[in-house]
Length: 225
Image 1 (cartoon, rainbow, N blue to C red):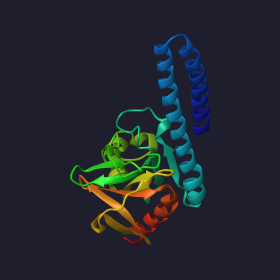
Image 2: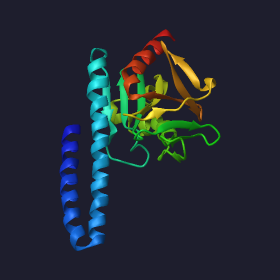
Image 3: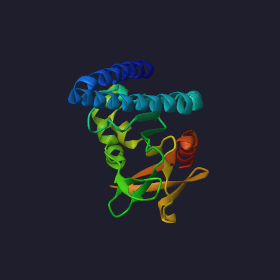
């Protein structure tokens, strides 16, 4: 389904791009509108590619024997509440993971403690921009979203609230993670990760290449409890 959706966006992007070029020769405004549409299609293609890679290579291939279930939420009805909570991952009876995958094109993700927000710093170190929508807010609302939609996953309200839950922000591609003060790091399993708390919920920040490693560490962590 992800491949089909990516192919659909690719076709739309191709049509919009070629149409924008032709219209731009005749009229600027329609050409700009189509360029905007082609840009949104390109963003959707990139998002599908991230989901597909995380879904296939990093999760299913690593944890199939543990009966992992991975749900790319792009395939569900999009709402402002969960459009950037990209993956819902379940190890039935063991744990559940809410994931947001963010690509900031070479910029560094930094947690602003005073504002309780994630921001991105440009490669030259100058200027900060807020990540929108805020991954913390999206991920922290994950349990409420899941409780309203639990029947789609065959879950009871008790299963939603009692099963160990973790929230993860994944810095995708060449996106970096800035260095923070020592108190913001926590050890999970065999490794240490940036750990942010807001509204009594913890979100870990990891790099793309650490995704499978973190999941293994998390499974080890909850097994020891």
